[in-house]
Amino acid sequence: MRLVIDKVSKCYEGNAWALKDFCLETGPGVLGLLGPNGAGKTTLMNILATITRATTGTVVWNGTDVKRKPDALRAVLGYLPQEFGVYPHLNAVEFLEYLAAVKGLDATSARRRIDDLLKLVNLADARKRPLGSYSGGMKQRVGIAQALLNDPQLLIVDEPTAGLDPEERVRFRNLLAELSGERIVILSTHIVSDIEAAATEVALISQGTLVMHALPEELLCKAEGRVWEWVVPTSEINALKQRYQISGAVRRADGTHLRVLAESCPNGAQPLAPTMEDAYLYCLCSHRAGGAR
Image (tube, rainbow, N blue to C red):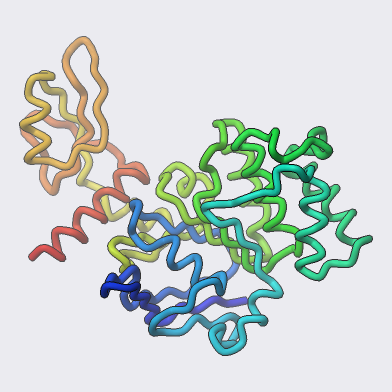
């Protein structure tokens, strides 16, 4: 099972390039696609889901060019888009039965699958309620269920934890980990903690280009020796923000404890072990600095 993205670019009207020569190859596991808003993540997801065609480049699923034969991928694809709509007058069972029919599942298999999925996403007790009465987080869980209807080999989820409360977010992360053993899961988000908890590999994207594709621990190594704790008076913070990349600040009785990203130790600072967020910010800043030169 292999997904290959080869020099994929997407240009919209007005010569606006959302992706430029994006290359990536991945197999079973959870690929965390991490980047700021506007980085090109959703455009890439739409291309992989065969909703949008790339301007140039190819996407190859198990040796088949998706542009030439999209049905080869569509048959084994599960997709939860960033903007997921529902029919408010249908209940969860009716809605999922409708989508199962669209996907070509037979009625008997679909009913069993829907029962299992509603339990999986913790909606069994609300299965007969109209979707219009659901909270945002509940609608998102219905979206997750529909993406899993056909037991996909490639599961794409775009900003899936938006609207979920902390407990639901943890459940979803655990679900992704359970699902990833025999399929490729692509988790697109700008929430670093989701990637840190679920991803087996990470791809950083910025301004439509691939910054880095690595294991989480390899990404962390990039920031090793470049993260510092610096206790400073609160009055100095604004000036320091002009000189340093600051990833966190906590106010305490002895001053403000800054988490600083820097190549060398600021005077009086102490080294810290990097977090995934530190590594993400460091790699993005390094990429932007390189592009500016």
